[in-house]
Amino acid sequence: MRNEVSRRGFLAGMAAVGAAAVVPGCSSGGGATSNVLQVWGGVPAASGPQKVVDAFQRKFPQYQVNYTRFVNDDRGNLKLDTALQGGVDIDVYFTYTQANLALRAGSGLAADLTDRVAADPDLKVFLDTDQPRAFLDAGRIKALATAREPYFVLFNEKLRERAGVELPHEWTIEQFRATARKLTTARTYGCYTIPDVARIKLGPNYWYDGDRSNFGDPHFEQAFRLGREMIADRSAFPWREVLARHLDAYQQNSFLTEEFHLWSTAPFNLRYLYDAKKYPHDFKVSFAPPPTVDGGDWNGGSYNNFVMVNPKSPKADAAWEFVKFWLTEGSGPMLAGGKLPTLGNVTDDQVVTGVLGKEPDKYFDVDSFRRVVLGADPKLSTDTRLAGFPEINLAYRQQRDLCWLGEKDPGPAIRDVRRLADAAIARTERSS
Image (cartoon, rainbow, N blue to C red; front, side, top):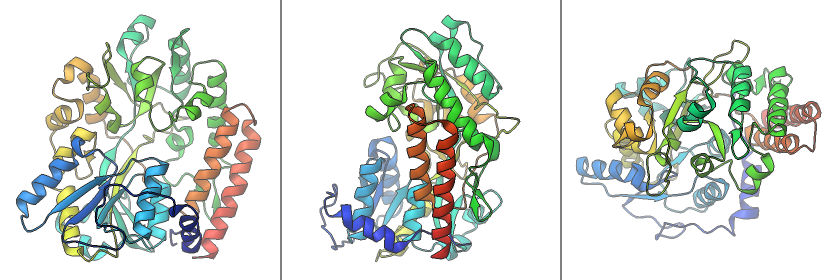
């Protein structure tokens, strides 16, 4: 079944808002091209990408590469989409969310990489459909995951010890809630928010059930209800504050200033925790695995950070050389941005110093990091069904927000998600 969205709908949306978007970082202008390979990504250049670029240029002096960073939020992704549609000189770019992956691949913005991958023995893992690390559209590879992003729960060691809470080696979602309640104080909420309850139980493609959505599964309503109840008893951060302060994208400051305690996150956020100059704090951070849900133990994380090639690029061969280099011998510097290579071509010691900084013991409980991140074999889920995904994602977020703001009960909210998701899937499959 083809994973695509309506190209007409996407282009119409871009026409409505794209004209107002300003695209930074490109001196060539719309439609102009140069011999320089243009790469756009959401990770700051200093957090690894520039070192990858430098190493690539040393190995391939015939190529020049310019890396442009876009902020990986709604506004930044809009700028990237507008640039791609407007003919700005972009050869290689990165996509970080499933919604954007579905939009770009389904709208003709991703080159077919299937034959190049199949011809390279070093990349054969990307042909695996049992544990997918590539995104397929109509059976063709359109994007390759460059990073493995397991989830974990971070503890503030100072507050944990003060509360007399044991660091869990395994726990359930009920124990997560009880722990958050125990860690709640007059000035610190117990957690930022809950882990993805339904994902942990159901695994990949959890939004889909045959040709309909899967939001009738009780774990979706359980998640809405649990989040609302924890917000009400102050063991989770107030959702009104989350939305007003855009904490759904940027949580590190609130964690480091002890506004909340438990933080369910992934390696990419660890770079903030060892930068004492920009993010001062006086506590170490320890690691626990995600809680289980009714025996389900999917990690909640995924293979991610998909690299894509612009099908309009006149430098396709150079673009592919860069993509392959990033995935293989060039992957090491990306550890500084918390990016664990998909191919696993780094040692554990390289991961520790790369992801946790030059003084890992100063800021982290390294033993728990090794146990949870390096010693475990987490079940990562990568969705392969994305029919109607952008519309479903929007409906889910809107109804969750209404529920967690206290404006709608969990049952009616999730039923509306199901109704809207079923309609989105039907529309997408009719247009396939």
